[in-house]
Image (cartoon, rainbow, N blue to C red; front, side, top):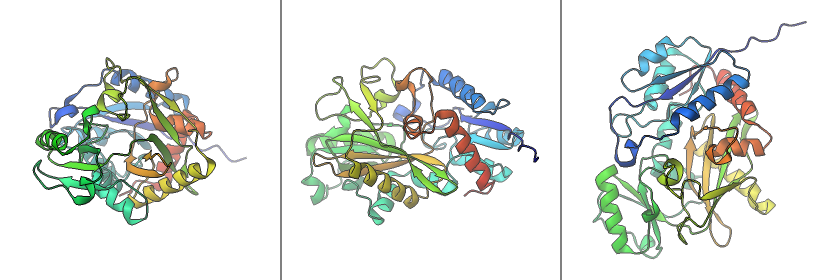
Length: 352
């Protein structure tokens, strides 16, 4: 009888600040981070990787930390944008892992770089027929607005290259050009460039995706249902909604998964997600976020490579969206972790 394969030695790599960068909301310190890290490592142990250890690294020591890892595979949770932006290692972590030849979960460098640029994402999605709201790039608040967007108010203003809803609050939805100019002044001054797009006033749905040996799997769509804490026509995932535990917006919504959608729309969202994922060179796991207009037509907002895997076994609203969607698709969190590790080992150490 053949011997069972040895359990791979797993290291979990997380990012930490070491004094570089930080623009606007990027300077915020999430109060629940330590508890979520502890819960995540416990889940990794329950998934069968009993010897797994967690390692924190910043821009100053990412190479040193990665060089010291004694493992077979890395669960890479470093989701940063570098020294000129949020001050956390992202591409820097990938470069260190690639240099060592360590297999790691999640995106390779090419897909990760694309995922850091909301405009390139939209261009790539549009090129393969994934519908996305009309948009325009702004480097200054006084640049002329395109005729298409002039007729499309309300508009949504966000930083071009931020993640985690950084720079987004209820005022990001602007009703007219006067409000647009005020908002652009703020966003451009803080974050450098802005993406302005048509605001789709409707339902918000996200589709989690994961790479399997047989191809990309799309999980059941998950809907974020905004409650009374959100003003009418302002149902959006703001920075407060995700990180400010004192805000009424923080738990001011519910998560429905599977979302209550007609079967044909469910299938279309999953198909569009797989197409968008391939268009942005997605690898490992991620999410594709959509808005549905009043007629139920989907518009892809962005692809989140290496999206959050935060997990709580007791509080659904403290979980990231991908683990909830995976569980609804028959892949509980521990199995999802094993799937991600298997994908990393299958790909090996050269991933870019």
